[in-house]
Each structure stands twice: as C-alpha cells, then as structure tokens.
Length: 291
Image (cartoon, rainbow, N blue to C red; front, side):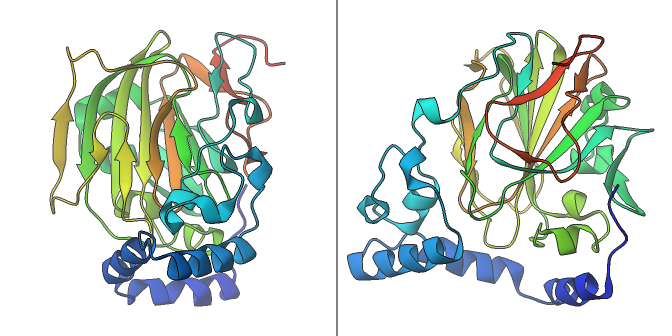
C-alpha cells in the first residue's frame, strides 16, 4: 500500500501545475531528433550518464552508433535478452519497469495512491460500453523510468478492435507526482488500445508525461495530438499481434496501464514496488495455480 504523500513530494510536485508542459515536451521532442553528430553524441553521453543502461542487451551495443537520442532511447533488444514466460496461457509483462500499483478494479475505480483513486470511465475517455468490460476486472500500472527499455509488447495473442486518443496534461509520472496529484493518469494525455483475446477483453493504456508527448503504435505510427478525443476502429481489419510482439513505443518514458476482465488475475508476485522485465509472468487465468 502506498504511503501518504510527504511534504517533500508535495514540494516537488507543485511546479508541474504551472510549468508549460506541452512547450517543454515539444522542445525535448525536437532535441531528441537532432542528427548532427556532435550534438546528438553529447545528448546521448549526458543521458546515459544520468540514466545508466546495459548496452550489452541492445542489438546495437555502441550507443553513439544511433542516429539520434530518440533512436538510442527506443533501441531494440536482443531477442534472448527477454525470454517469455513458459506457461502458454499466461499474460506476460509488456515492458521493463516497476509496478506502481496492481489489483482489483472496484466499483469502476482504480487505485492510484493512498487516499487517491480515479474513474475507469474517465481513464477510457468516457467510453462507457468498453469501460463495462473491466468494471470488476483487474488493473496493473507499470512505470517506465528513463533508464528502462521503452518499447511496449503485447502480453497475449490479441486482435485489435479499437484505439482512442485522449488529449490532456503532461504531468510527470514519477512517484512524487503519482502520490500527490489527484487522478493523474486520468488527466494526462493517453492512448487507450482495446483488444480481444482468448481470455476476453484486454486494454492497454499508454500514458504520456512531460517530455513524452510522442507515442506510437505499430499499426498507426506516431499518434498526433488532435486537440480532442479521437476514435479509430479496427474491427474487421485483422490487426493481430502474437504474444511478445512489439505493439508500440514511448519516445522517452512514461506509464502503461493494463486492464483485464474478471477472467484473469495477476500473478502472486505482482505488487507495488516490484521491478519487472518484459516477458516475465504478469497474469494467469482466474483459478489457475501461480508458480
């Protein structure tokens, strides 16, 4: 259970209410795509110093071989670096990161931090029909720090049905802001991707944050800020992803929220604060034994 926000966390969080979040993120977007070698190498050097990463896991191990800071940040990993859980009916963790919170969705509310929750309906952009699929289901909020691998993979064989872009703020999703800013995940810019699986409905919500106003999926590419809620239907278009395949990526880091119906339950190991890796067991069919 998360502790109440401390005075230090509140002091660190309050500037985000007044910062020009979108302007800062636009500047970072441009900087991360500079290809002029001296500038991009300097940016990569500083970034890697502040956020050490294991380059031996990367397909391209030389960090200066990447054409830009963003290319370095979204680097591919060697397939053997992230083996998938051996239980064929399990859902795998879609990212490297840590568990912010995980548990049951109770009366359409999702737990954020002690004394703070938010509406499932609001998170999904007001889509009541799809929210009903998860009303008494499960959620897992997975935080990606700047040092983590930032491609997002599909937890289970799935067929895409719908995607919704929801504009919003770009609050930081670091612990001090999550513990302090009410309804943060339902206020930030986000993309909700809805899938059908053999275990029922699944949703993956990609949550933007300051410096992370650029999200993309493998079927759509870069998702532009349209200024309003935008819906994209894929029913009948046969957009299918196999368990473990890449489904999208963050251009700089943020948070993924995975929603399942009541047919799935999180593995016993999945709890707040746990560091996780892509491919490890995330969920199992309800009633199945957890290894």
